[in-house]
Amino acid sequence: MRIATWNVNSVRSRIARVEAFVARQDIDVLALQETKARDDQWPTMGLEALGYEVASAGHDQWNGVAVVSRVGLEDVERGFPDMPGYGEPPASEARAIGATCGGVRVWSLYVPNGRKPDDPHYHYKLRWLSALRDAAAAWRESAPDLPVALTGDWNIAPLDEDVFDITRFAHSTHVTPAERGAFEAVVEAGYADVVRPFQPGPEVYTYWDYYRQRFERNRGMRIDFVLGSPAFEKRVVGAEIDREERAGTGSSDHAPVIVELSD
DNA sequence: ATGGTCGTTTCACGA
Image (cartoon, rainbow, N blue to C red; front, side):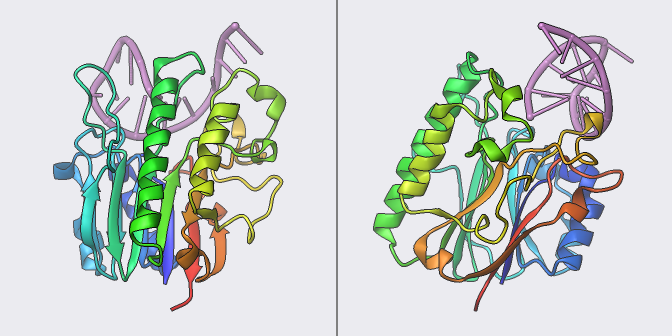
């Protein structure tokens, strides 16, 4: 079973690449972030023709997420317990969707960006991550043997080596102790980074800004992760970051991250 | 400190 996560940066502008990607990489389950499409705007036809089902959470089209699967799509949940909204009245932000696919619980997560460390969005990011940790800890207790994957764009670089030049992030989000602590709290709740053992750093990234030829110079960030419960982790036999998908024109600014599970 | 490039709710703003 092959599971991928990808911040696609608009599924409508990228749908041809999405269809080509799942075919080329033989993907069974694909978690997407930043779909930028409401549910009624989702271009599902081509994927359905390829044998996939699509579940999306796109009420807020900027932050939309989705799970695409050809091995079943059951028990779909949009959001997690106590997931905070933003603003007043609270925005119904579609940053999380979970589904059981072929016996594996897959979550597609789009962690709030945070904008700046003194921005209200930054504090919202930390609240959101705290609620995610609590929900994820409860899942471990209620179903300790279930393979669960928390995949997506975490908008956090857990280690200094996960950004191209840590000295340039002195006043930036993604690397603050609070954000890294929030990421670590999810790990401590029982979810391991299953990709890093197969793709050790440094200079192993999943995101490169569009401008200043950041990809061509490999000046990127490692912010997209697959965290797995113990039952998930022990089935992982390989993982890769599809840099080829980031190359050339018309790509997302993120590369897909792929994990292969034993049957 | 600034700007660069994308995508969209586009001549503005978020990432």
